[in-house]
Image (cartoon, rainbow, N blue to C red; front, side, top):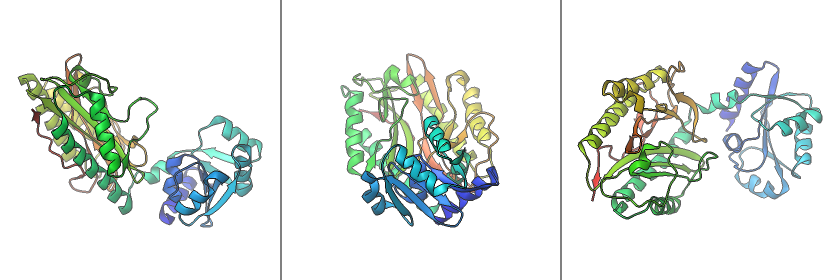
Length: 358
């Protein structure tokens, strides 16, 4: 925790020289700095002290789970803000708070707050050994879930029933589904024409012989995210199915081979995109090649077109090219990886060969 706090303070001071306090309002950043996930404000000072300001209802839990913090209990709402301001008065504060009314209340109470999320993400981009270990375990759970998919996917099984089975098994293994504001479902289970929608919502549709089935699993384990996608064929696969699958598989392999420290995110994206274009499917690859993972499902860096951000050792990212044929089928293959100076460490071990399930 001390190294993380020091690094965020260093990045904050680079962004704003007079900034000697960092305040986290978002639960991901609070957890990153303290080990506590909940309603609170984490305050890191350049004198080495860290304070965790919580509502009284969170105090006991914060005491139990936080590390090297002074936990301060108060009431919710205006008293929480007043308590925060009293702890940082006279200091320039760098914060991740994006709520307009909260910022207004802090400034009204005399707090000098600067909103800048960059110091948080600059530090969180590079994973430490503990984070890599946890993300690796999360990826291992995804592999076990794909083994369950291989056993359970049958004609007549609905997308929703498969999602329910996978969530049940995941939670038995200690994982939890993350929450997204942009979707109603924690997983993507998309069969037949639904698989042509990159962010398909899970439906009551029953799986049929001849379906291509995209299973995109994103789960949180001990706070951290792993993300992977496999595409299955049910009963049979047409020549077109196999050709599209082979193209995506080859593109993903090239992307993985390219994802080394010192290479730009745009270069990784281009490696995947160029191969797909060479095979005639350029217009059907309609999203970026990947994204950072960690405490958020999607966080920097972003592996997108023309991005000149360079990958660095111990970044955790996904590589996930796809091809989507409207009203017919889609194919996506995705792994979570840890960037190295040489070839990346691919965390997902489940086969990427096309499985035709019976």
